[in-house]
Image 1 (cartoon, helix red, strand yellow):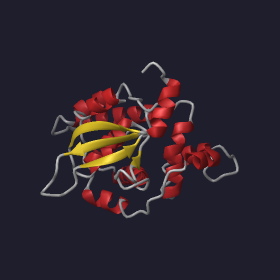
Image 2: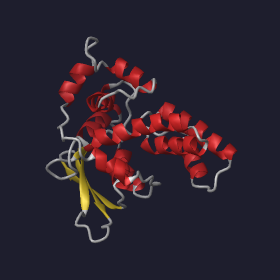
Image 3: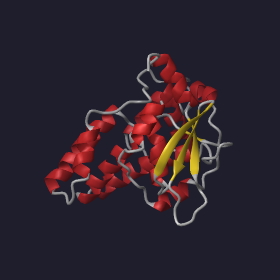
Image 4: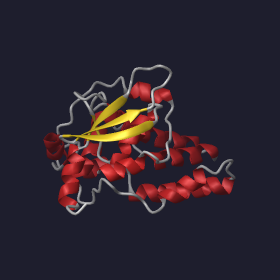
Length: 234
Protein backbone atom coordinates (compact mmCIF):
# COMPACT_ATOMS: atom_id res chain seq x y z
CA UNK A 1 0.00 0.00 0.00
CA UNK A 2 2.78 2.42 0.94
CA UNK A 3 4.67 1.86 -2.31
CA UNK A 4 1.59 2.48 -4.44
CA UNK A 5 0.60 5.59 -2.49
CA UNK A 6 4.06 7.14 -2.83
CA UNK A 7 3.98 6.62 -6.58
CA UNK A 8 0.66 8.43 -6.69
CA UNK A 9 2.24 11.51 -5.13
CA UNK A 10 3.72 12.19 -8.53
CA UNK A 11 0.53 11.31 -10.38
CA UNK A 12 -1.23 13.72 -12.65
CA UNK A 13 -3.66 16.02 -10.85
CA UNK A 14 -7.04 17.05 -12.15
CA UNK A 15 -8.45 19.92 -10.12
CA UNK A 16 -12.19 20.16 -9.67
CA UNK A 17 -13.87 23.59 -9.60
CA UNK A 18 -13.98 24.80 -5.99
CA UNK A 19 -17.77 25.20 -6.07
CA UNK A 20 -18.26 21.47 -6.56
CA UNK A 21 -16.16 20.57 -3.53
CA UNK A 22 -17.73 23.34 -1.46
CA UNK A 23 -21.18 21.97 -2.23
CA UNK A 24 -20.04 18.42 -1.44
CA UNK A 25 -18.69 19.50 1.94
CA UNK A 26 -22.17 20.70 2.96
CA UNK A 27 -23.58 17.18 2.98
CA UNK A 28 -24.00 15.72 6.48
CA UNK A 29 -21.26 13.33 7.56
CA UNK A 30 -22.42 9.75 7.87
CA UNK A 31 -20.09 7.01 9.04
CA UNK A 32 -19.79 4.13 6.58
CA UNK A 33 -21.37 0.95 7.92
CA UNK A 34 -19.99 -1.73 5.61
CA UNK A 35 -22.09 -4.47 7.24
CA UNK A 36 -25.24 -2.50 6.39
CA UNK A 37 -23.99 -1.75 2.88
CA UNK A 38 -23.40 -5.45 2.27
CA UNK A 39 -26.87 -6.28 3.57
CA UNK A 40 -28.77 -3.86 1.33
CA UNK A 41 -26.76 -4.37 -1.87
CA UNK A 42 -27.19 -8.14 -1.67
CA UNK A 43 -30.94 -8.00 -1.00
CA UNK A 44 -32.90 -8.31 -4.29
CA UNK A 45 -35.86 -6.56 -2.64
CA UNK A 46 -33.81 -3.54 -1.62
CA UNK A 47 -33.80 -0.34 -3.67
CA UNK A 48 -30.04 -0.50 -3.17
CA UNK A 49 -29.61 -3.98 -4.64
CA UNK A 50 -26.27 -3.65 -6.40
CA UNK A 51 -27.39 -4.71 -9.91
CA UNK A 52 -30.12 -2.05 -9.71
CA UNK A 53 -27.62 0.62 -8.69
CA UNK A 54 -25.21 -0.39 -11.43
CA UNK A 55 -28.01 -0.29 -14.01
CA UNK A 56 -29.07 3.19 -12.88
CA UNK A 57 -25.48 4.44 -12.94
CA UNK A 58 -24.79 3.07 -16.39
CA UNK A 59 -28.08 4.44 -17.76
CA UNK A 60 -27.06 7.99 -16.82
CA UNK A 61 -29.78 8.26 -14.17
CA UNK A 62 -29.47 11.74 -12.64
CA UNK A 63 -32.13 10.99 -10.03
CA UNK A 64 -29.80 8.72 -8.02
CA UNK A 65 -29.60 10.05 -4.48
CA UNK A 66 -26.47 10.49 -2.42
CA UNK A 67 -27.49 7.47 -0.34
CA UNK A 68 -27.75 5.41 -3.52
CA UNK A 69 -24.29 6.55 -4.52
CA UNK A 70 -22.92 5.72 -1.07
CA UNK A 71 -24.19 2.15 -1.33
CA UNK A 72 -22.99 1.92 -4.91
CA UNK A 73 -19.48 3.23 -4.19
CA UNK A 74 -18.83 1.32 -0.97
CA UNK A 75 -20.80 -1.67 -2.24
CA UNK A 76 -18.21 -2.05 -4.98
CA UNK A 77 -15.87 -3.56 -2.38
CA UNK A 78 -18.15 -6.60 -2.12
CA UNK A 79 -18.12 -7.31 -5.85
CA UNK A 80 -16.16 -10.25 -7.21
CA UNK A 81 -14.18 -8.09 -9.64
CA UNK A 82 -13.30 -5.39 -7.10
CA UNK A 83 -9.62 -4.55 -7.18
CA UNK A 84 -8.51 -1.48 -5.20
CA UNK A 85 -5.45 -1.16 -7.42
CA UNK A 86 -7.25 -1.50 -10.75
CA UNK A 87 -5.78 0.57 -13.57
CA UNK A 88 -6.90 0.55 -17.16
CA UNK A 89 -4.38 -0.02 -19.94
CA UNK A 90 -5.92 3.02 -21.64
CA UNK A 91 -5.40 5.51 -18.79
CA UNK A 92 -1.88 6.58 -19.80
CA UNK A 93 -3.02 7.08 -23.38
CA UNK A 94 -5.70 9.52 -22.26
CA UNK A 95 -3.37 11.45 -19.95
CA UNK A 96 -0.78 11.95 -22.68
CA UNK A 97 -3.45 13.23 -25.05
CA UNK A 98 -5.07 15.47 -22.43
CA UNK A 99 -1.87 17.28 -21.48
CA UNK A 100 -0.94 17.95 -25.09
CA UNK A 101 -2.63 21.29 -25.68
CA UNK A 102 -4.28 22.76 -27.64
CA UNK A 103 -6.43 19.92 -28.88
CA UNK A 104 -7.74 19.35 -32.35
CA UNK A 105 -11.18 17.87 -32.93
CA UNK A 106 -9.55 14.54 -33.75
CA UNK A 107 -7.59 14.59 -30.50
CA UNK A 108 -10.78 15.32 -28.55
CA UNK A 109 -12.36 12.35 -30.31
CA UNK A 110 -9.44 10.20 -29.14
CA UNK A 111 -9.65 11.50 -25.55
CA UNK A 112 -13.35 10.68 -25.50
CA UNK A 113 -12.80 7.24 -27.03
CA UNK A 114 -9.99 6.13 -24.72
CA UNK A 115 -11.45 7.71 -21.59
CA UNK A 116 -14.65 5.78 -22.24
CA UNK A 117 -12.69 2.55 -22.73
CA UNK A 118 -10.75 3.26 -19.55
CA UNK A 119 -13.94 3.80 -17.58
CA UNK A 120 -15.26 0.46 -18.81
CA UNK A 121 -12.27 -1.08 -17.06
CA UNK A 122 -12.65 1.06 -13.94
CA UNK A 123 -15.99 2.77 -13.30
CA UNK A 124 -14.58 4.82 -10.43
CA UNK A 125 -11.55 6.39 -12.11
CA UNK A 126 -12.25 10.03 -11.28
CA UNK A 127 -9.42 11.37 -13.43
CA UNK A 128 -10.73 9.59 -16.51
CA UNK A 129 -14.20 10.96 -15.77
CA UNK A 130 -12.80 14.47 -15.81
CA UNK A 131 -10.90 13.86 -19.05
CA UNK A 132 -14.07 12.50 -20.63
CA UNK A 133 -16.07 15.54 -19.50
CA UNK A 134 -13.43 17.88 -20.92
CA UNK A 135 -13.56 16.18 -24.32
CA UNK A 136 -17.36 16.32 -24.42
CA UNK A 137 -17.37 20.04 -23.56
CA UNK A 138 -14.75 20.79 -26.20
CA UNK A 139 -16.98 19.03 -28.74
CA UNK A 140 -20.02 21.05 -27.57
CA UNK A 141 -21.77 17.92 -26.29
CA UNK A 142 -22.99 19.81 -23.25
CA UNK A 143 -25.88 17.53 -22.28
CA UNK A 144 -23.68 14.44 -22.18
CA UNK A 145 -21.01 16.41 -20.33
CA UNK A 146 -23.55 17.52 -17.72
CA UNK A 147 -24.64 13.93 -17.10
CA UNK A 148 -21.04 12.81 -16.66
CA UNK A 149 -20.40 15.78 -14.40
CA UNK A 150 -23.33 14.70 -12.23
CA UNK A 151 -21.72 11.29 -11.80
CA UNK A 152 -18.39 12.79 -10.83
CA UNK A 153 -19.94 15.31 -8.44
CA UNK A 154 -21.92 12.57 -6.70
CA UNK A 155 -18.85 10.38 -6.25
CA UNK A 156 -16.91 13.27 -4.75
CA UNK A 157 -19.85 14.04 -2.47
CA UNK A 158 -20.03 10.37 -1.48
CA UNK A 159 -16.43 10.29 -0.31
CA UNK A 160 -16.64 13.62 1.44
CA UNK A 161 -19.85 12.61 3.22
CA UNK A 162 -17.97 9.74 4.89
CA UNK A 163 -15.94 12.02 7.16
CA UNK A 164 -14.19 15.34 7.55
CA UNK A 165 -10.65 14.39 6.64
CA UNK A 166 -9.61 14.51 10.30
CA UNK A 167 -8.02 11.79 12.40
CA UNK A 168 -11.28 11.36 14.30
CA UNK A 169 -13.44 11.40 11.14
CA UNK A 170 -11.30 10.35 8.16
CA UNK A 171 -12.61 10.13 4.64
CA UNK A 172 -13.29 6.54 3.57
CA UNK A 173 -11.97 5.55 0.13
CA UNK A 174 -11.95 2.30 -1.83
CA UNK A 175 -8.84 2.95 -3.92
CA UNK A 176 -5.54 4.77 -3.12
CA UNK A 177 -5.99 7.10 -6.09
CA UNK A 178 -9.11 8.61 -4.52
CA UNK A 179 -7.07 9.92 -1.60
CA UNK A 180 -5.12 12.09 -4.01
CA UNK A 181 -8.18 12.94 -6.08
CA UNK A 182 -9.87 14.50 -3.06
CA UNK A 183 -6.75 16.44 -2.10
CA UNK A 184 -6.35 17.69 -5.66
CA UNK A 185 -10.03 18.56 -5.93
CA UNK A 186 -9.65 20.65 -2.77
CA UNK A 187 -6.85 22.53 -4.48
CA UNK A 188 -3.95 21.13 -2.46
CA UNK A 189 -0.77 19.35 -3.52
CA UNK A 190 0.26 16.22 -1.61
CA UNK A 191 3.80 16.30 -0.22
CA UNK A 192 4.11 13.08 1.79
CA UNK A 193 2.21 9.97 2.80
CA UNK A 194 2.18 8.10 6.11
CA UNK A 195 0.52 4.89 7.23
CA UNK A 196 -0.34 5.62 10.85
CA UNK A 197 -1.86 2.20 11.53
CA UNK A 198 -5.33 0.75 12.09
CA UNK A 199 -6.18 1.29 8.43
CA UNK A 200 -5.68 5.06 8.61
CA UNK A 201 -3.39 6.98 6.29
CA UNK A 202 -2.26 10.59 6.54
CA UNK A 203 -1.31 12.73 3.57
CA UNK A 204 0.49 15.98 4.24
CA UNK A 205 -0.20 18.83 1.84
CA UNK A 206 1.45 22.01 0.73
CA UNK A 207 -0.20 24.82 2.66
CA UNK A 208 -2.06 27.46 0.69
CA UNK A 209 -2.25 31.21 1.26
CA UNK A 210 -1.52 30.89 4.95
CA UNK A 211 -4.29 28.35 5.52
CA UNK A 212 -3.81 26.17 8.59
CA UNK A 213 -4.51 22.82 6.94
CA UNK A 214 -1.39 20.67 7.00
CA UNK A 215 -2.86 17.36 5.86
CA UNK A 216 -5.81 14.99 5.72
CA UNK A 217 -6.67 11.54 7.05
CA UNK A 218 -8.17 8.66 5.08
CA UNK A 219 -9.66 5.35 6.16
CA UNK A 220 -8.40 2.58 3.88
CA UNK A 221 -9.21 -0.32 6.19
CA UNK A 222 -11.81 -1.93 3.93
CA UNK A 223 -9.53 -1.58 0.93
CA UNK A 224 -6.64 -3.19 2.81
CA UNK A 225 -8.90 -5.98 4.12
CA UNK A 226 -9.96 -6.96 0.61
CA UNK A 227 -6.44 -6.54 -0.78
CA UNK A 228 -5.07 -8.87 1.89
CA UNK A 229 -7.59 -11.54 0.90
CA UNK A 230 -7.26 -11.19 -2.87
CA UNK A 231 -3.58 -10.29 -3.15
CA UNK A 232 -1.84 -11.89 -0.14
CA UNK A 233 1.61 -11.66 -1.76
CA UNK A 234 1.55 -7.88 -2.29
